[in-house]
Amino acid sequence: MSTNITIKNLTKRFGKVVALNNVSLTFDAGTFVTLLGPSGCGKTTLLRCVAGLEDPDDGEIYIGDKLVYSRAKGISLSAGERDLGLVFQNYALWPHMKVDKNLTFALEIQKMPKDEMAKRVKDSLKEVQMEGYEDRYPREMSGGQQQRIALARMLAYRPKVFLMDEPLSNLDARLRMDMRTELKRLHHISGATTIYVTHDQVEALTMSTNIAVMKEGVVQQFDSPDKIYHYPANLFVADFIGNPKVNLVEGTVCGKNLIDIGKSKIEVENLHSTGKVVIGIRPEDISISTIPIPGAEEFVAYSVLPAGADSTIVARQDDDELTVRVMGISQLKMDQKIWLTFDKSTINVYDKESGNLVN
Image (tube, rainbow, N blue to C red; front, side):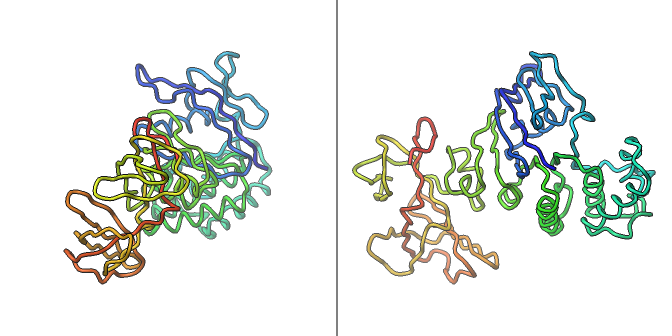
């Protein structure tokens, strides 16, 4: 049974550093919410405040209808009183305990009947595909296996809320991909409200119901992965999300639906802005032609970077540079002339001064 989480005007300081600046968020029951951002943005601090491992300086936290923290009202429930399951980057398994004891340690404190504990161990190990590992010590398992055991321990406890702080960052790239699949499946099976901390945008985009992108203790955008990627709320989110990175080009509105970017003019749909702007164009929203076509801009293929499933083309026009992504292995040659066209329906326009999305 999952539950919703409400965070109201949360502020946390470490000396003069403001780690969280008046953060307010609501996570619906059963959702998978990722806190995403660069190092030092406040995402782990927010998770630790929800977990009861840090006391904020101001604000309130509700888990379901229960107020678990309020400085003004003098309420601060311990982590053990919040009905949470935590998984950390370093697994945090007891090295002197075998797998079954690692899983039942918290259940024994609750004085759960032995037959129920045995059933939970069996069921949770099955869910993470680690059946038969009950008698192994953590040192006898790989990093990926230890992380699965840490997840199984959380599942055995059956909390209403899962909290995960960069649980995959110690794993190699192939294993991270496998574990993303498992984590998304586990969330589907359990239905638990999940808060997941990462700096890896691929993890966030592929696993989340919603993403909170953070910068310097402030939530820049809280939205679905699709909207975070296709409609970033400001230039920080646009630049942070996407690989290859978004193309950001400065320009000036010069007419109805037209933006002058120096050597050419780009048409966008339903433009409602004036003055200086920055346009955002995703690399996959640019088309390449090897022959001149009407409305296309001439560039040179400065670099061609094939990567199997797709290729990245770095195109240059004098000092201007654009990144283009095409499917498959590109047959373009470096220094070859190319002509680029833009999908005007996908172009985002940002106010240059504020950095906020205006179109």
